[in-house]
Length: 97
Image (cartoon, rainbow, N blue to C red):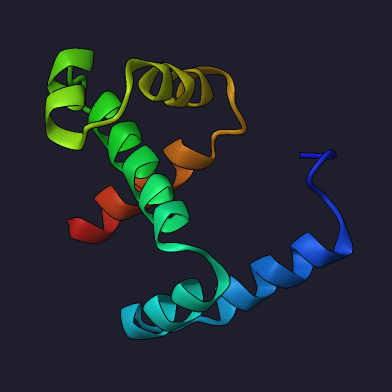
């Protein structure tokens, strides 16, 4: 986290936290990133959710089109990262209840 922590990144995160609806998110992220960048983030998040549910690599590849290298990288983050994926996945699960 220390490598990432700087004022410009803080400002970006504050901007994201200011978004209130999916429509606002679409507008902001379409302006700030390319379609491919956004789809890559979305794919990684889908991989993280599927891994947390115990889905096999083969099934994840088939459903998401992610490479095994991407799946492995996401798995490493889930197990040894900053716990960001797990935090959000748990919050979304709790929100569904």
